[in-house]
Amino acid sequence: QAHALLMYRSKVSSSGLERLRALEAMSGLGAGFEIAKKDLEMRGAGKIIGFEQSGRDSMPPEEFTSVLSEEIQRSELGDSYMTPLPRVTSCTIFLALDSLITAEYIPDVNTRMTTYANIARLKEPAEIRAYENILRRKFGELPLVVAQYMSLAELKVTCLKLGISRVSWRAEHIVLDWEIAEETLKFLLAFLDDVSARRRFRQSFAEGEVLVCGVALMEPDVQLWKLREWFGVLAKCAVKVGRQAISGTSCDIFRSFPNHSKDRD
Image 1 (cartoon, one colour):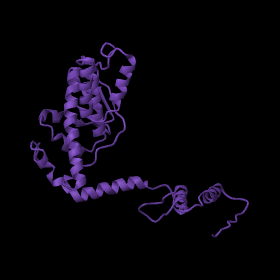
Image 2 (image 1 turned 90 degrees about the vertical axis):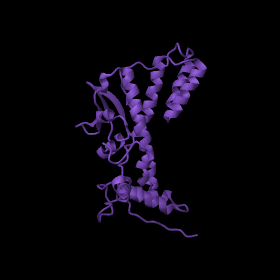
Image 3 (image 1 turned 45 degrees about the horizontal axis):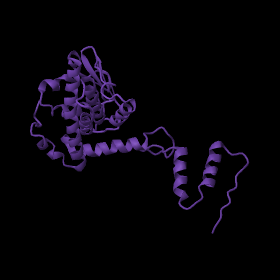
Image 4 (image 1 turned 120 degrees about the vertical axis):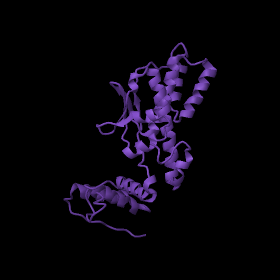
């Protein structure tokens, strides 16, 4: 067994002292990797494209990896490439309709709170529809406000899949906080059979905002039904296209949807 004695002057800078403490703390087998990580954290990664090997004024490595991966896919798939959808962790929906689980439908408050919690944990539209059937078997047919609550829950999980972080309304339009690339939006909208529905979606002048024109003039329950139907189609197509792009079978994308063609308006 070997030992190393490190000698240092009494006056040490704060960064130097931090490095010495790292060496002191990381002395076991395999500690070299942890020391290297600590060193990288302290000095910065430098420039990914350039000569500087320290500093923090460059693109973060994880962002560079994401950009590089995207460009590789773009070069491999050519015209079939679809810019990935944005990723969001939450979505808020503001529509002018009543939606809740009423005390008349589920009288026991603990059961009602548990039901809310169970619905919040569901991640797929199919799971929400299956839970609706459970509620029907236990408590009877869903009143309108409960049915609308379940429809909003389904719309929310669909929005999360599409990368929509907020759904609200302004004047006669539904407003989506949706940082989607223009070519990706056009690509997905082509899967909607209803041409008039496709034409309602327009990217706003505000960055990261998409308008669904005229829908806010409809009755609130119709707004919810339309958005749930349209977003459901877009989400299914986005998932299928994304899987094929990852697996390298993008040439079969259009054949997978008989109602869609590359020349379709």
